[in-house]
Image: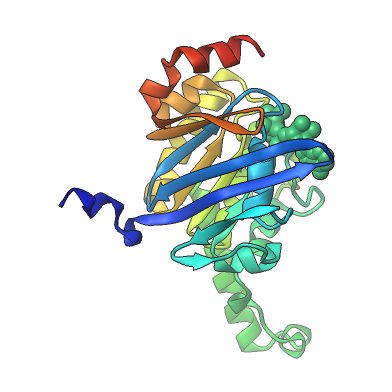
Length: 261
Ligand SMILES: Nc1ncnc2c1ncn2[C@@H]1O[C@H](COP(=O)(O)OP(=O)(O)OP(=O)(O)O)[C@@H](O)[C@H]1O
Ligand SMILES: [Mg+2]
């Protein structure tokens, strides 16, 4: 019975022996993790530890030198970024990437699933089908924006939003693709304490609302300890510690890695 928590259905993401080198540098060296469905898992470590590189490997930006990535029981190692997104992984970036000249609403609409698309002729002649689909798309996008309390800003250009709200919009875009797993790369970077607090609440909320599994890279220890159940600490491309959040953060080796930064 003790194996029940480790059955394959409970593991959404399994990463085995993942490595990549750039020239002589082992940026990620034998990385392993198992993330449970519905879990909020943290990936932390000093600057240059390899955190973003792990995300780039998981999303097919880089192909690993060795190792396997299994999402929901299916190997996705070596697949292209768009294929991996279709399989159910979405991400945000350390530096915000938005369509700054599009409206907030259109930023979410462009990310929504292809099934909401319609034929060119429908759109030229504005057929009833086109208008119905357009309405459905607007409603879906607005409902996602409302989770982030951005619906009042729907018609603004993305560039007109304050920084903290641009960060939220990026998460909204990622969620619009209906991922099983969302990867957030330092979502609180550059936020003030109030914005960070709000973001923590939002991340906890989206896990419930969208029943999504979350892997979070974060430097803000308060944010990490407030919401993550388990953590992995990377240092120089290798796993330094992993386990339950509080135990990991109190580990002297981990504290040393951070103070030595
Ligand atoms: N495309 C690349 N070519 C060469 N080196 C790279 C490449 N991508 C990452 N690196 C190197 O790999 C190491 C890990 O980088 P990475 O961006 O993953 O660190 P990080 O943990 O995300 O750091 P930070 O907290 O500063 O964002 C660094 O030494 C970086 O310079
Ligand atoms: Mg990084």
